Image (cartoon, rainbow, N blue to C red; front, top):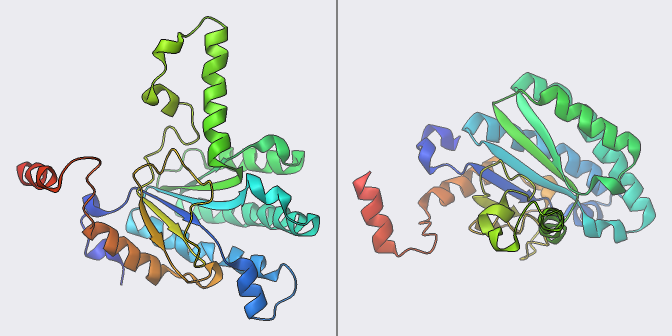
Length: 252
């Protein structure tokens, strides 16, 4: 059952982020060929995107390839790059159908020129779509993100365009990836691990965390819907007391 039928819009998360973990273990458990767990994982994304756009989620960000994943065996990295290329080609018609904007975050300098060009083309073709935004994190790391933002501010200080005393969390926040998007409300990790693995560290400062034993290729929209329902029942205090939150809610 879709939570959009039972949850008020103000109870829905605006931004969901997912660490899509468990592809290799899925492949081993199902006696698939080497790397085929990642192939199965690619197909799991479509129903999740459809659920989000139909439910009214504004932004869905998925962790496709981390900055640390470059350390994996070259054959696996090559396969992942091929799958990312295929995923982008496959997603463009779906983005057109559902009017979803496609964006990418991460250090593009490490990617091939062809993949960079494909990403830029997909972003340009979907830039005006407003039903939802799908963000794919490729060659991304949260620490890199914050350091990259700090470097941009440092360059402005060096050029005399900015004083060091002017730098605060609001200003730094304007330079991290997805600065123009809502903060992450829900951060989900599949695959049974209990860590966030350097994903959207700044953007997830107050995210509600959800962990599931389900391997990513088995993660379905009904499990996400159950998580969204639980999210709506959590009290988000952002440093305030429960009593303050109750009073604020009563005064609306």
